[in-house]
Image (tube, rainbow, N blue to C red; front, side):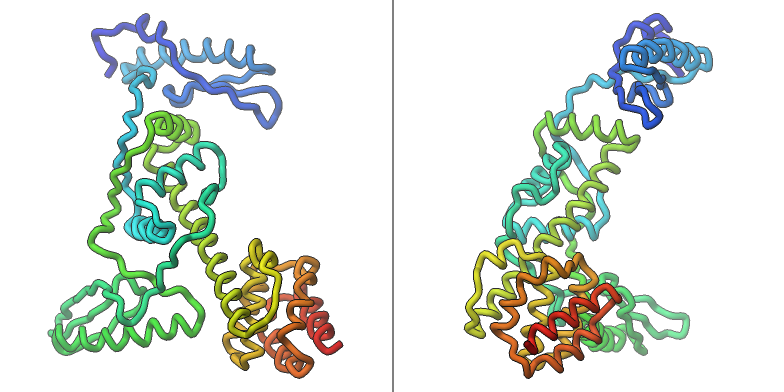
Amino acid sequence: MSDTTKDLSYFLTLLYPCEVIPSEAGGFVAHHPDLVGCAAEGDDVAEALKNLSEARQLWLRAKWEDDDSIPEPSSAEPSGRLMLRVPIRLHAALDRLAAMYEKSLNRLLNEVLFSYANALPASHGFGSPAAMVSEGSTGARYAYRLTPLPTGDFVAEHPDLPGCFSAGGDAAEALTNLDEAREIWIQGRKEENIPVPEPLSAKHTGLIHLRIPPALHADLVRDAQRNGTTLNQGLVCCLAEASLELNNLAFSTSLREKLRRELQELRINFEHSLLIDLKPEYAAFLLGLLCVKKTEFVEAEMLFSRAIRGDFVLEEFREYFDLVKTFLSPQHALPLAHCLRRGRESKESEALMSELVEALRA
């Protein structure tokens, strides 16, 4: 119900912020973010604003007559203090990214949200991660969940490892069996080249207390209004996308660094500049070639498959043919052809496979 101390004339004189955006059909659309559904069109900005002024009066009158509550213009200055509610897994992922880039969680989120508000890539200004967080291992401490059955038996599982569970006649037996199942589960993931989830800790509650500049806070509020979401919803989407982008950046850096170490260990001369901006797909492919050299054919097939599923372009990879010839000889052509055939995902990659093998034999 509308505030009885304020009549319709009060609301009609309020100055509501408005936004004008180009229409796909031509002209412009103007609307008041504070007044849901109050919008108008015009052939130009001036006409759209004039029509919006008339639409606002009709909107306010209708709300008043229906005895609905009428919002006032957003006037509160953002404080810069937020409490975000995010999925627990996203909280853990952001925490790991902060450790990886050697930043506090608050600093990491400030930089990500600044980039978002200024339409920049999430990785803008991050550079390479200073440290890599190791994957889950059989020695990692994962949470347990025990469920008693009507038969008196127990089912034990790791909530952080989907599908990893075991059973036993009592709780102790179920947990012992689960420890063995966990080792098999993790080893199977690694053999299939699938990431192993990190254990979630008790500190990952999904609640993040964040301190940001008030001006950035205001920008994020306006963006949420424009997109028709709550501020929390908008920030969760932003942070989820940023987490993926920063993880991809870290993965690319990890592949390039691993390739650099492998080349050095094999005492293969190479131009360091070639590796600085090397795409992760190409780094995976070159690592696969090194696996062929070391007769690690299963690993080679997985790396080739991963590379070709990515943004792999034959014309761009040709510049690395000379590098390939420095550590593979004609005797590697046959096993290479076999691994490439197994790792090939599409007909588009056949030209690369044939050309690379022929270049090696030449």
